[in-house]
Length: 245
Ligand SMILES: C[S@@+](CC[C@H](N)C(=O)[O-])C[C@H]1O[C@@H](n2cnc3c(N)ncnc32)[C@H](O)[C@@H]1O
Image 1 (cartoon, protein in one colour):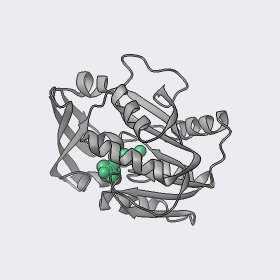
Image 2 (image 1 turned 30 degrees about the vertical axis):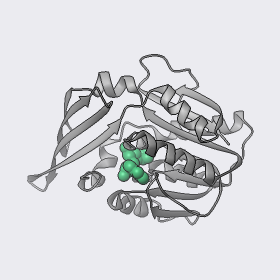
Image 3 (image 1 turned 90 degrees about the horizontal axis):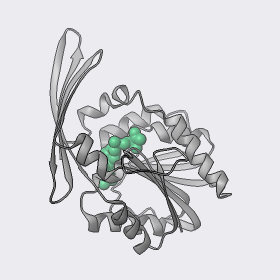
Image 4 (image 1 turned 180 degrees about the horizontal axis):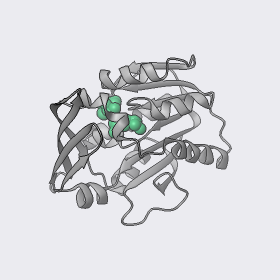
């Protein structure tokens, strides 16, 4: 699929509003609350390494992976100065690292890119088998509410300094799949380069996610309103899950 290729090179510019520091603060809050002191950390769908960098700064021994080579190449340059990081090209659905971790994280709706429920279960089972007993799994998803009602069948236009993009969406109510057709125009000297990407995210219900976690063996499952200590409500757009082995 045509995802995170050329987009990778402008991803950070478009994600400027995301406060990864507050996401890291939330992760630290959870770890403190449950008296967890991780050493080995795995990040799935690390993208350009924005959260990865903060995990490295915390002093964790980090392995981070993604499916997109273009995203990984940006992450590689960003994380060049850290010694405690290994970047890999792997798929969340079938990775096998032959290693156990104290914490697995996955941020910014990477999990929604798993569009088949049986594959979501495989991914969760895989996370479970890569965690040490007592290990924690923290991840977020775009909520069913957001994908259906906010992104849904709507079109968004964004005009930034060097990037103009049109983001047209189609929501399939039967399968709860949202397709994003994004056309980018990126300024290169005095011309704009045009390219297109198609992204597909699945809107999982909370019960689908919680059942998949339980079936994989996870316990102590909690869900939050984004990266805040608040409980979610019906209009929460980003749900952050905590589950333990
Ligand atoms: C919205 S980006 C989030 C990137 C990063 N976690 C962040 O916080 O900025 C979603 C990422 O998930 C990756 N991804 C999608 N499906 C994947 C899969 N099956 N295995 C590994 N990575 C995947 C994409 O390549 C992309 O980098």
